[in-house]
Image (cartoon, rainbow, N blue to C red):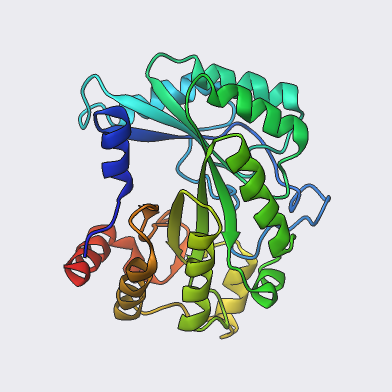
Length: 290
């Protein structure tokens, strides 16, 4: 079973292998600064999902150079995407966003920027800036949807209703940026059918790409407490592989699959421990898709 992987998409688009470099630009999140809450989403790590990024004390340029150094043995004369990953990367005054984005865009080895954010943090000024940047180098906006089911969204403290996501996708498509949507598989109390419904919805919403992420229980999160209380049961290895196969079957070839799993920082991973062996997981998924 073939699918359109991110690696293939990037080769098709840029003519060579492209690596993503994670950036922590020092932003926060409305779910942490008191606007919506202070504890973040129930699953979110202390690093705001940017655990593999460099220190926010470094400039964007310094982080790009450090990221290049980490993969220098894998890539020669390569190109990179600057991935603003940690916390909510459109949640700041627009002049601050402009400074950070332009520093990345103006780097000669950066061919595009990818910006992880929330659908409720895309005001008019931000959209205008994204439109402007996208005319210079391609912009990918990664939206943290996680689920379409309102009960689950409330449980994980997502903080916005589904119609906010719908509007964000329409607004972003109007300005021609590439929309990538994050979904978490294995959220508490969701059935297999619930998860597949979320995948179908994203595919029909206008998204260009999709990221499928296994739910991790990470140290220091509220989800960890629920796990130790027996309220959360992570997906089993075979269960996850089978679920991914079912997801891929309903994702059209026109939608790029950016991720089929994920690996939390091993020092913080509580469960499922099998997910730490990413090579084994990917091999099992690829075998299931043959």
